Length: 110
Image (spheres, one colour):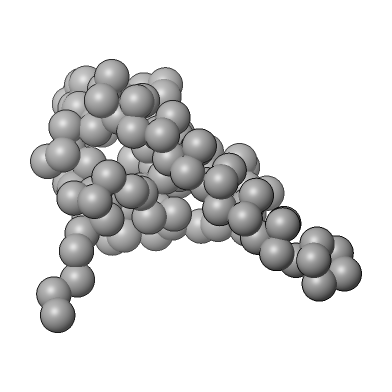
């Protein structure tokens, strides 16, 4: 059975989620990686290969766009579609946490 790409199903992987979230404001690649590390207190570190593969997918899905291509630094920013998907993803993840809390609370709390 073929594995669906999460973007095709309207969901974001953790890597896509953090990259898209970091691109609410325009950034180039290195700054995207550093922003994610700062945002997550160094719990999540995305390497260049994974980041640029994900950026290519986000560009193809029109969730981000290339804003500038100066001095070999490509700058990206989230599109309106990307922001809307990010909002839906935040709600989806809230629901996931709610479900987990309900079940775990039945078993004596988290």
